[in-house]
Length: 360
Image 1 (cartoon, rainbow, N blue to C red):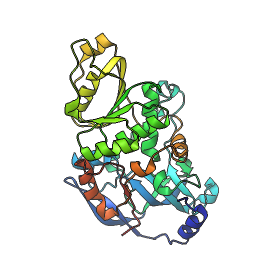
Image 2 (cartoon, one colour):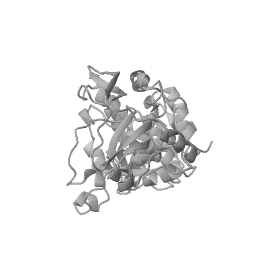
Image 3 (cartoon, helix red, strand yellow):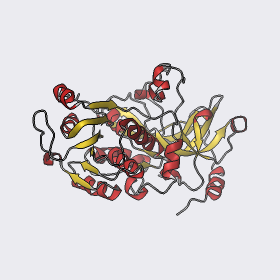
Image 4 (cartoon, helix red, strand yellow):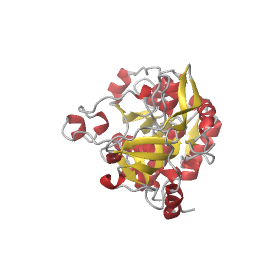
């Protein structure tokens, strides 16, 4: 069903913006999140107040909570879409009711990473402490107007909310150098792995296999476009200095598990490439002798390319992505964030979970 942007904007423009408090899912410490009433963000010069429509739960949110990296009082959530409700709209070219997503700040454009199309690791970028972020697991968020992108009229806000992980997947696929005729392995069939599979298929890569221990996620990988799935124990070890019987040209490690990365390395063909996408706590042991003999490559991929979220929005709006299989049908309210995180960490939910902060 196509979204009626004019009607949606009109309805949202009539919503009164609170003057004091809003609901938010707040990290309270010891691996727990609770819904609290917190002050509505102050809108500073150059910023707009955005009512959050949907916000995806990211793997990094899980790490911040369950590894207890986040600081008490932090509001997580960075994969969001929303509607402009207040701020210096006229001065910045924005009007109340416009649907938006937040796109990253471009790098300096002149340092070595920027010249290589990697502004996410720009040498001039100021580091941010994500442990104490004020994110979008809340009814409202204040953001710089310079970082906003309009959502295409035909694209539902719930789909636009996955622009951030889609941009990450696009960047990973670009850095991998994968070609349409390559045989590809994706380790980890959770939300990140599924989006990687969908982007690969949208880019014409047909032979994609997903390695995933949970049967539910293997089934969803097939629905997204994988031609086959395997459990980790189904992958055989390679011979010394040789390859497995049916090796892969490229492997995307999306689970964040050290054992998965080590197993993926063993499945690569000569001159193969291992792309690290998922983050994890345990460091991976790399068989450097194997990398030397087979002339393998390993690349880390962090965030987005120089084009930001625009290519991701265009891809999501193109009809080339299996959106129903990539996004869980039922969103959760703020009160459901903790349970959804626990279920995601156990592999009980295959695809992207969206949070609707405005739903009680």
